[in-house]
Image 1 (cartoon, rainbow, N blue to C red):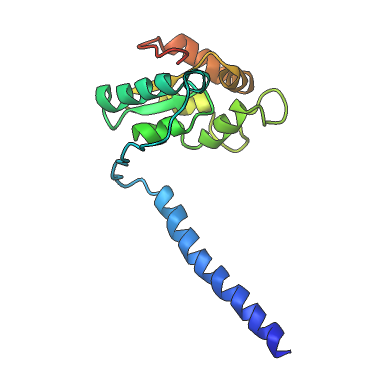
Image 2: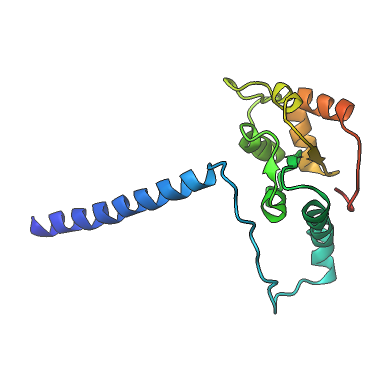
Length: 173
């Protein structure tokens, strides 16, 4: 009986510690306070062949992120109509529709049920986007994830197509 109690205590103690760590991390992720930009050193010794760089769109991605970091203000909001959330992280820019961010991401993978997926209980993406202050850049690609996001959010796709125009192009972006 003593062993079972000891085992239970060992499981409860780490779970309690993890709860505090997770709550701190999650609250930090949702905090709208100013963030310190991420500065990562360039890795050495990691190489990709030319075919991998092409198929993964590495050079296009780097060009896009450099443009966003150097040519836009930190207040610029991004609307990725694709499932590449790393663009937000790497460019240190925020999503234009934070309440719809997750839905647009999984829509890009084709993981939404039904044909249209405007989340219930949320203000429409178009209504929210029409009120975003300042500059908004739409990130789009000619690929399956953009096609899926546009299929699941047709009103948003029509709004983007009628209210935005291309500024720059980086390969397929």
